[in-house]
Length: 357
Ligand SMILES: Nc1ncnc2c1ncn2[C@@H]1O[C@H](COP(=O)(O)OP(=O)(O)OP(=O)(O)O)[C@@H](O)[C@H]1O
Image 1: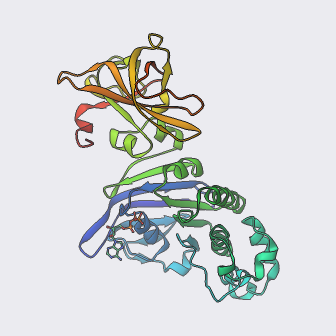
Image 2: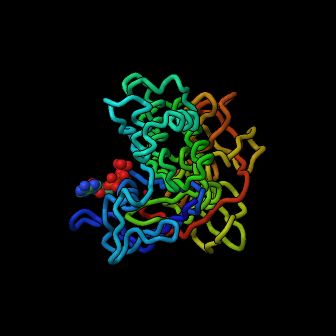
């Protein structure tokens, strides 16, 4: 099990910087998901770790050994790192067994037993061993790519959006098979993704990459429940933001007086809560009343846009909020309802969110 440390790393292409002085530690045997928008530098980070790109500053340390840094350069093939790309990248002219064996050291390439073991590890039947990649589904191809990456027994596996080309059902089962295989192999893993649900469900830690730097690195529940700022809150999941005035431990806003979690900014603040924290009741039964403006129905749940009746701000605008409710009996547009808020909310200094609108 390898710890990995990225220390003060900066890297770019030519004169264009992509990552600026970033730090990241991944505990041996754990999985970290790096979540960021398109072009934020996720693949660049993996390329630096794998050794396909040299950082201009800082160092990369794998299992206590500096593999990139001032005066130090370990070539990719000597780093013992497995890499799974978005499209799998299987060799089309080789069978499944041939592809997997390619990841094995020379003397072991003929060991059919090890190939079958690896197929089993990624939850694929031995009968697929002699097929070619074009005779497999997308999910099966991704699992073969994972088996190939795991073949040499790497301590560290880098996964670059390996599930993004799969449909929803296949995506979930491939993700689970991957997670199981990584745990069984005891490998440390870094998963790059732009899918929030995937990051939250797959990883032990989630790292938010934005503007060339990590804005927050924390376990899924912490990063979702206690985002450090409004940008992270809005980036990771759906965030409802309303203006408020905070004093000790509580905030007053259009939804009533609400308890605050974590850091309390006093005075004029922006209040952040998740849409599932808003519960709909009969009119007069909640903290405030509201009228349903519109509804997006998803089957298992529905997102309801509401105009809060007490929420008229100084400029006369009505405060809108968004609630996520169970899909069984959602309200209808125009209906009057009561609103209650479950659990504490977060507050941020008002200036923090001015650039979100
Ligand atoms: N070989 C290259 N030469 C020059 N610029 C590059 C090169 N590769 C990537 N870039 C630029 O570096 C930035 C980061 O790219 P990178 O591929 O790391 O982003 P990403 O977060 O993985 O994006 P995506 O989610 O779209 O794959 C982008 O602006 C991209 O255009």
